Length: 414
Length: 103
Ligand SMILES: Cc1cc2nc3c(=O)[nH]c(=O)nc-3n(C[C@H](O)[C@H](O)[C@H](O)COP(=O)(O)OP(=O)(O)OC[C@H]3O[C@@H](n4cnc5c(N)ncnc54)[C@H](O)[C@@H]3O)c2cc1C
Figure 1 (cartoon, each protein chain N blue to C red):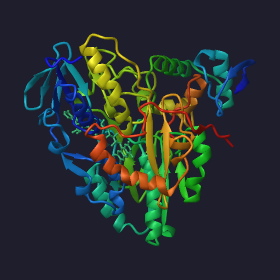
Figure 2 (cartoon, rainbow over the protein chains, first blue to last red):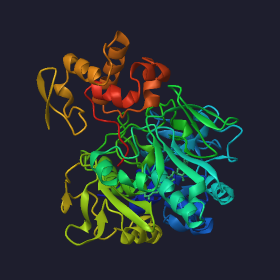
Figure 3 (cartoon, helix red, strand yellow):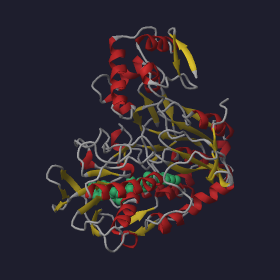
Figure 4 (cartoon, protein in one colour):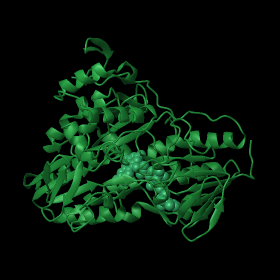
């Protein structure tokens, strides 16, 4: 079932693009991946950088070491696609033809989407931690912050790793407590959604975490503009939130060439069939990872679960067979809860995060939706799994692609 | 769980969002709106509600920015029409699931 004459082009060599290209070459296909980056970052590590844990060199590796030698790596950025002509143009002006195209360009923060955000305060008292330089600049700002109000804030959904801002707030609480400064620092969590936890089971199980840690929450707050001089966020309904130090998750957007394109939505995310990952517009076009407009988390674990479906569907597409709609929205992630503990979530399109054990129904050892030390160690160990198993495209033992409901229980919601 | 809204028995979740968008109708919308303190649904309210339902039916995820770019209302008007939390309140009235993050 192989056809080496077909040319597969993947745009983006991030978590999804690396895994996919490494898997596809094993099927003896002609695979080209286009990305101008020389290195790949382990983004989950960005969460810890501001608190002085890890250094950047622990979180990055040259792409040449991560991508199989049989994959052609074109160091360039894609500028536009000619969908009906099956070709694309890069920023340096090269034209590249394809039989099957996969968009794996992820998402990036767009501070310019919010009035005042990228102005006078940016990287002075307004920071992000979704970029390596943002996280490092924030590290310095946190070190110098000894009193006042720290605001952790989300502009809009969807964002990649939707739990990261919450984890940041928990770790900030820890960080200032350890430095003996917590009494002088107010921490506030501001979100455009109705709360930090919006799903019933998680809200009832975890809602107390914020109160316990004395983190104030402001919900349903959609920022119209930032006033960097007065140091405040202004909501569309006139409410205001003051800050001394603002840690923001700006609007997340898809790659520039996808904006205003016929295959993507208004934020630049590619519209695909939720089960097969095929574009709703062109049959030889697919999207994977954060670049796709799927109603599940934008997370590396999700990209990992998607890969199997996509490899299968690319093979089917080449062989003229009907596609499988086998991706179920499975997402699996560790959430740092502070105090050296983390919780683990496992959910999909249909089932919200529930309590139980993982990956073995009765034995765990991970407990779902409950903070524990072993989950925290699991989160830290994940960096090794990422470099040595996930990216090379090896199977991770015991972690199924499809979510399993075994060992999970629907708790009573109080 | 079952709840009686506007004299009709419908399936709702723990927070009163309709579980099945096909059980929705105008009377239910009015009743949920009045529970949320919106005493009258104007044409503009209905335009937003219908737009949200159309989006959901075509499998599109909803967010405030998207509503603002819809051409039906801008975000300021959206907050005025559905005070408090416009997306969550408008979704509830439109018989759609609650807008959520991943947990
Ligand atoms: C702070 C933080 C914490 C996180 N924690 C977790 C976690 O605990 N668990 C988890 O599962 N996930 C986590 N994530 C999310 C995870 O890192 C991403 O979901 C994952 O990297 C998505 O993979 P991707 O391949 O879709 O995008 P990316 O890995 O971001 O890769 C996109 C690639 O596309 C390239 N690209 C963009 N535009 C173009 C163009 N025009 N032409 C060519 N190339 C282009 C970029 O250079 C980049 O290499 C976290 C993310 C952050 C920021």
